[in-house]
Image (cartoon, rainbow, N blue to C red; front, side, top):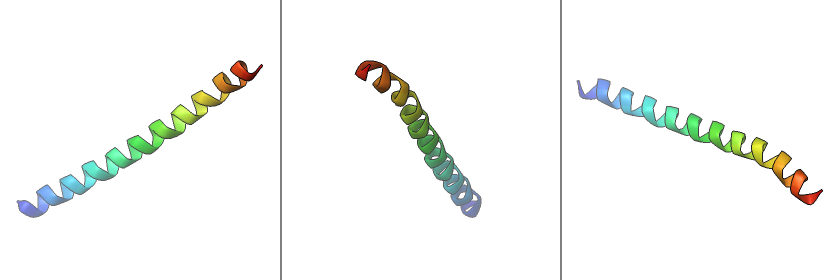
Length: 40
């Protein structure tokens, strides 16, 4: 049972890292057009 829990925890952590990475990429992607609009 503990082994299953550890696998689940590892899965959740990796999923959280992936979501965090995707959100960061999305924020950078969205920040580029707004920055160019402001500079213009």
